[in-house]
Length: 305
Image 1: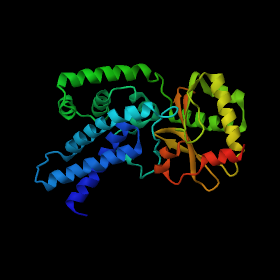
Image 2: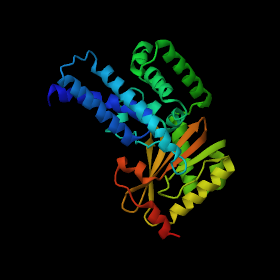
Image 3: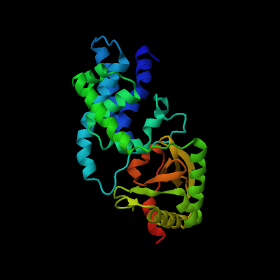
């Protein structure tokens, strides 16, 4: 491996970590990462002296991601049903987000929250609070004054703080909640399931129009519990389908697999204290392909009707 190849390899995880948190899409983040690394390579080929390759790639990645976000907003407004970020499995050693400085910022809950910020607010918040860049550096990256960068960060931080849970869950609580949730869902135990759900729990499904899913989010313990029981009951009737508990974006979750062990869905949970506050199901095959072979969930569901 040449020095150039080694440098690009070292920059790759940092570029991906920024791009994925900015975009919430693995495929889009990989495109941005590759373009950013190509520009580093071209700059070096052109004889440019790059004092800090890491800062250079952060600048290029952030600017590319901001541009992508502006066009992505229009696409997401036209998206069929609810839009959720593309999930990643974070208990794999080869997961690129594993190499980032703070894996907790990659949670689906945080990525959904970031969707409500402007591209510039998102960039400033991530660069400062997650990646520890100073405001002078951030101002140069986004093309704003330092005062503007600070104001953007303040507004973004206030917005995120208002909507983040106040009570954290220990790893032991989280694992126990996860075990009990999937056991209750699979056995159709409505009473047990309701004891695990927060009063204002939210259930969101993302099928992208490719696979049947909730058209809009459901709220409330009773509605969500009944919907979960009904969905798991339907899945249980499908031949060969199984689930496997995994860590999704740093939190509890499970993979849904067909009889050939191909992925057909991802279920991710958010927990606060001793309760589950949100359940997110992603069955759009386009959002699962980066995780491995994908099965035909839609055909499976049709065959069981």
